[in-house]
Image (cartoon, rainbow, N blue to C red; front, side, top):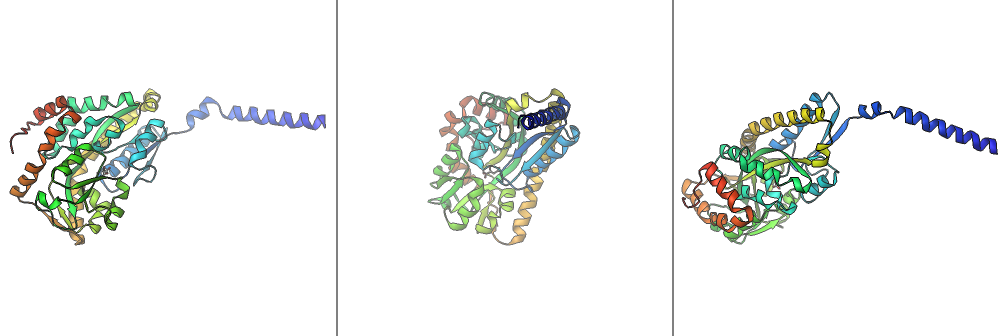
Length: 342
Ligand code: LMR
């Protein structure tokens, strides 16, 4: 009995020491560092393509020392959960829209939601690459979040099952929005009823009539098939959706410096790529929606656009203290925007 016990113990010790031999530091190093990159849109969008480009480049530049797993379409986390998951370290990279940082306590990002502030991708580039963009990224640090880049999507359209040609056409309509107080105010300003909802729920909510309409970029409309459940879409270009690519700060800081350097290089190239294709992706999506014949696309006249601008512009003043008066004034100056001029 004693002998058998001893034999078993010896075997156990041998197995353990073999295992510890196998698990040398060298073999730990051979295990790739896994980066989970979670997002809520389809692969075939500016962000989806950007994430896949980052994966490809990151793996190439680190010779496989890093493995990037991309989880599109809210397959890992939805809007509400993803930032919390990043802070907890359950996921390493996200690219939430800049309209979704309020719940994290960084409400200044909602400045990007102000209606009719940005007239072009060029305006946005000036802001994201300038002092405001950098100041906003720095505000994430105390939350354990490190900002890596800004990625474009594009300008938004409005949609519903009835035509939207003037601000009054939105009156009384329940409109799905992202979790931003500025967007809430924008719809209140035109007497609509804003309803915050996760992106993954939008299609069903529109189909079942939980909400009447929404706003989004054209590539998001098309890839989520939202155009199939909305009869009318108006190309108001009233504001913008873009992203802050973020990582868990502790994770990023803990990476071996040479690996981090290669990942930064991959991120820089993926950013240039995403920002280069953003407009083209939205243009292609518009043609695809048009070809589907499922929704009526309306391009407002300059006078109609002006009426939307006039109706929504008071949001700037009302939300100034939320987004930060300094930040707003800096942006006005950077892009030469006069809030008193229609
Ligand atoms: C939305 O919720 O409508 C967008 O933020 C989705 C996205 O990531 O583009």
